[in-house]
Structures are given as structure tokens and as C-alpha cells.
Amino acid sequence: MINVIDNMEAQTVQPAMQNGGLMKPNVVGVGGDEDSKTNLIVNYLPQNMAQDEMKSLFGKFGEIESCKLVRDKLTGQSLGYGFVNYLKPADALKAVKTLNGLRLQCKTIKVSFARPSSQAIKDANLYISGIPKHYGQLDLDNLFNAFGRIICSRLLLDHECGESGRPRGVGFVRYDRRCEAEKAIEGLNGNIPHGGKDPLIVKFANNPGQHYQKCLQQMYQQMPIISPTLSPRRVGGPVSAGGSQNFIGPMRHMAHCFRFNPMTSSDVISHMNLQAMTNNGQGWCIFVYNLPADCEDGLLWQLFGPYGAVTNVKVVRDQPNQRCKGYGFVNMLNYDEALSAINTLNGYQLNGKRTLQVSFKSSKQKS
DNA sequence: TGGCATT
Image (cartoon, rainbow, N blue to C red; front, top):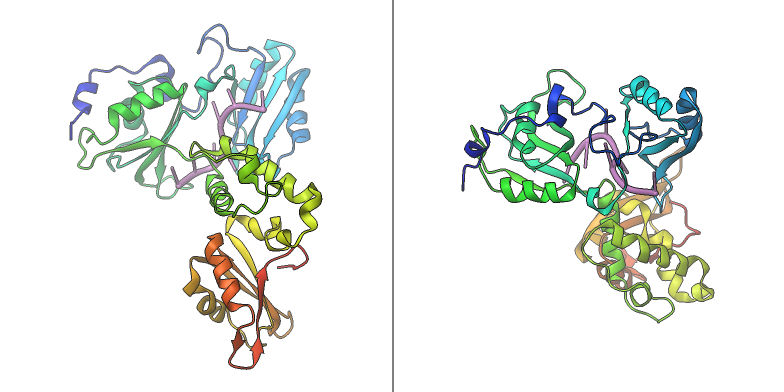
């Protein structure tokens, strides 16, 4: 291991880092003349804030040319950030000065001038672990400052909400450009920082929601090729490992197949419909019918566990007496394992008395 | 592995 930090001690803090201003807006003058003087990016918006509310809040400072709350393309959920473009630069500046740092519900919003959109500024966020526990926010910033312009950074604390939180040794650094993030990985990953004992791990951060998308991606890749018209693997092409951007296209096509293709009335879809596939990213949802009234969750774990990764089980119960209503649901991560469990357990005689009916969950079955 | 950062 190389102790690189000794080489970095001579580095001075760059202009973008003055005032320790990581949460300060990157206002006019920072980032070059090409930056828009009217277009703002708004981060850390409350989850339930709608575009209209955003427009109403920002509209107080002048006429707005456009306002957009960014939402997940598949789920429609707010991604917690958006853009406001004013007609006049003075109004945009007023909004930054007044609204940046405003507390909205439990969030402190960040309002800053948007950089011109380009591929170069995307995916420039790093996740860092192995940070010495005595490092503070400024130590982290000084360490990463040498590789480029930091847009924001955060050292995570044990108790994010409280003042007394201790550093967890992990954090995030977002650079202006991806190439800067790459340089930081190259320069710091695997090296022991000054005053530390363990090597740093520096890598690109996951995008939020990536866990969900990974589950979907895994299910997508595991789908058997059934027919040229129904298989998204034939029409959408293979999914590369490059992240969510590559996944959205094929997924949208897959949703289209299942929802609109005339072939969806076939029995193939009764096995692999969208209900069974998604279920909050917990894997393939299996419907289990003819369970006894005294059925507990443990029975479902025992029955399905031997076939592979079970992520969740649910026995559906009557409200007043909590007796099982005769059915339940099991989520399994892998398609092949779910199919194997269904094939084996469908028709299984439970205690030699009840014959179980097991299938992928259909849209009719409410969990 | 955040408080969902480029529409």
C-alpha cells in the first residue's frame, strides 16, 4: 500500500472549497461563462412535494419559463430534485439567495445554478469507506479536493439527525465531472490516508433505487426466451452491466409487451405477468392457496426455503380472529428457483390432507 | 451506500 496522503499535504484548498462551502450554491462565476444564469437545480425536495407546489414556491421571485420535478420513469415517484428556469437572471439569483437552505418538512432544500447538462457531469458521485474515524468533513474534502471540483460531499455520522453523531468512516463526494471522480479513484482507492490504518475504498456510488432496479434486472435476465414476440431479451437485446440507464429501455419495452401485446392473453402471461415480477423488488411473487386456518409464516418459509432464496412470506389473515384466510404469498429472488418450487409444491399434499395450489401471483390475487 | 444532482 502506498501512503499517498503525504504527497497531498502540500495541496491547497481550491476556490470551490472556500468557506467550507460544500452546501453553498455554485453561484455565478463558479463554473465558467457558459453556465446558465436563469436555470436552477433544486435538490433535497420533500418526497411528497408536487411540481405545482414547487412552481408556486419559486414563482414568488419572478416569471418562470419552465419548472420540472424529476420523477422515476417507471414508478412516477419523485426523485427529490428538479429544475426551475426563470426568464430573468436577477430573479433566479434572488431565488437562490432566498430559498437555498430553506427547511421544508424534514428537509433542507438546496438551490443552485444548474450546470449545462452533458454526459461529462453524469455519474460523478463517489462512495468512500475506510475513512479514519477521526477525520472530519474538512479532512475528507481536503483529501479529495486535489482531484477536481467538488460539487458536494458528506461524511456520514452514526446519528445523522443529532449533533453528537460520530463519523462512521464512510462518505460521499460528488465531483463536477466524471473524469475527476475517475482520477480520485485511481489516486486514492486502496491507499492508506495520513493518520489512518486501513486502506480507503473509493468507488462510484450506487444510484438511489438501484437495488430495486438490480432486482428487476436480475429477473429480466433470468426470464426464459419463450417466443420472439414475448421475449424482451430478443427484442430489447442483452442488458449490459453499465447501470440503470441501460436498463430502462428494455424494461419499458417489456412492460409494453405485457400490457399491450395481443399475445398477452396467452397462458404464458398467466405465469409471468407484471404483478408477479415486480412486487417492490422482492423478486417473483408466488400465490399459495389452500393453506390451513392455523397456518403460520414459518410453514411457508419451510416449504419454499429448500428451493432457493426466499425474500418474504405473507399469510393472509381474517381481521377479527387472525385466522389464515386459506392463502398466502411467497417472494423468491430467482426465477428458476421460483419455478422449481411451483412445479414441485403445486399439488403437494400438506399433512396428507390439503392439496396446495401454487402458482405465480396473477393480477387478480390481492396481497 | 445519502438528504434520489442534470430534466
